[in-house]
Image (cartoon, rainbow, N blue to C red; front, side, top):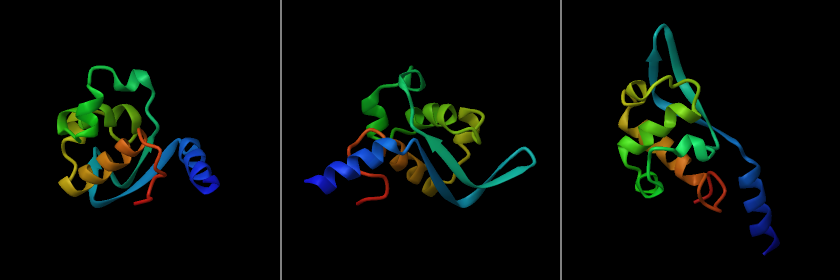
Length: 105
């Protein structure tokens, strides 16, 4: 019981998650091999439904990702992500809405 509570506390204390990309993403002259996601706040989620995010809807995910990831300047750039990386980023984003610690499955 105490371990579960500690894990939840650790998860809520984790405000950022580093995600390594399987396919580098080139934005302008910069090539990214990893992206940092921060925990979204209510304003970051405006304009999309939580259910769409939990279902990992591409339009909803790519709308929110640029708001919580400084390396992604726009939804257009987020749409250029490799599907494997988009899936991984989606899982990390959705994990911010659960009590399960990031990386625990």
